[in-house]
Amino acid sequence: MEDYIVSARKYRPATFDTVVGQGALTATLKNAIMQGKLANTYLFCGPRGVGKTTCARIFAKTINCQNPGPDGEACGECESCRSFNAELRSYNVFELDAASNNSVDDIRTLTEQVRIPPMNGKYKVYIIDEVHMLSTAAFNAFLKTLEEPPRYAIFILATTEKHKIIPTILSRCQIYDFNRITDADIVGHLKNVAQKEGIEAEDKALALIARKSDGGMRDALSIFDQTASFTGGHVTYEKTLENLGIIDTDCYFRLTDMLLEKRIPESLLLLDGILAKGFDGSHLIGGLMLHLRNLMVSRDECTLPLLDASAEMRQRYQAQAAKCKPKFLYRAMKVCNDCDLNYRASKNKRLLVELTLIQAAQADEDDDSSGRKPKRLKPIFALLKTAPVQNRQAEKPVAAAAEPAVQPVVQPAAQPAAQKKQAIPSFKADNVFTSIFGNSNMAGRDRHEESQKQENASGPAPAGKNLTDTLLQMNWTGFASGLDRTDAPLKNRMANCRPSIISDTSFLVKADNPMVAKELETARPRILAHIRKALGNPAISMEIEVDTERHMEHILTRDQLYEKMKKSCPALVELDTIFSLELR
Image (cartoon, rainbow, N blue to C red; front, side, top):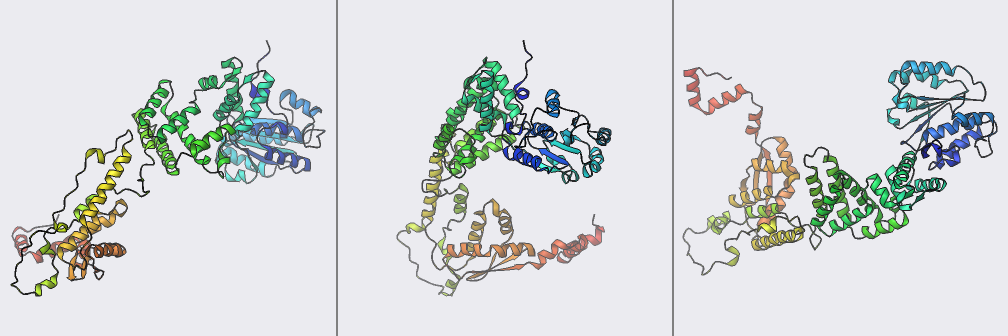
């Protein structure tokens, strides 16, 4: 029985043309070799398994080839190429693993070897893998060699974490960024491997392996070998799902339809079935986020290239995306992302996922049938606070005091309907609270209708009213209570200020300090608009001034404040004299 070699090693590229998914980068390296424009230091960076070390070895082999081809590839027949192919290295190519050789002594040993010229060939190539693992002291010891290396020495540094390399090293390198390999390129390469190995593989199964590999060819080949062993050489979609522990894509399509149709009980049963198969809740949420993202990019032809899927799957995504509103997709992705962030810290992970599905199903329920946002309960209660006072006699203008003291009293036969006591709307529990099984649209419409009834019952404000203490306080408090969370500071400021009437159409507000006065000044147009509309009097004005006495109280020392108290309270002076009081 022959020794088994894994596909990642057996089918490792030996030339630039066989490197998968890095066409622009390999073309640049080939042109540099053909033109003789070689740098002394290169930095290959990118995700794992995308060909960094492979390209470094091909580069080292090619520049030492004695008979390079016109296309910039090594001949593979000369002594240098045969030596390299036999042992995957030659006397002129040295590989160093910086993860286990990251000390200053290791770098010093390397710099001493650099001084020795090559025995045969033009260049000595040093490939340092995982270079970000070098210590800071080792990097500093390496700086001088990188800055002024011998003409025959070429360094190729490879890393998956470029951000960990100090800037002084980066400035001495030509940097090549390797991209993740697309699913289409991975599937194409896996088809060639399967054909050479005599393995039957379905395209859907290979696409699933490519998606699982996350753009890494080495990972894809390792998963392919594992799946081929599991299936006995017949790689099917179902067996691949079972072997890799991946939730079927059809599951996400069915789950999204359930969320769109607000079939929450069925979505919870689907979750139960997934958990019963041994999957973790975070796998479902992560896959659902990716599915929603694919639906989002499928809505527009401009973003459709961002969808890395087959033509058949693209059509399926586009068909379902046409049924999704953008607001649903954005909010559903938001709640799924919040679940993903909180999943690890949650004590009841299943409940967290269930709540996420419920919230995702209700992601597009903020709009009523007219497209406007329904009124919240908070504005309704604010309206109750600002309801007209029933005693109309108290709302007479101040100018009425000039009328004769004795007037004939006319008792109206019936009180006008507009002046009857206003009925407070009653709220049923099934209208206020939303059922988790899809009744929230009815509840939103009920709240909107109750709000409209309350506004219609109050009727328009009487025209041309002058200011009274009652009307001023009522509308001042009503405006403050109607503010939302974003205006919480202003709401608190207004609660601490009590306005006073100056004239029939003017009132004064005293602020505790200049900062409060400035905030009230900013809100003056909004406050006046509310009061003018409520009283039907556009001549009403508002003045703001700082209450100097109260402002000074805030900056008085304890002793000064105590002396002020004694001046205003003679009894305190007498107590101080008798008992010799002291501040503590």
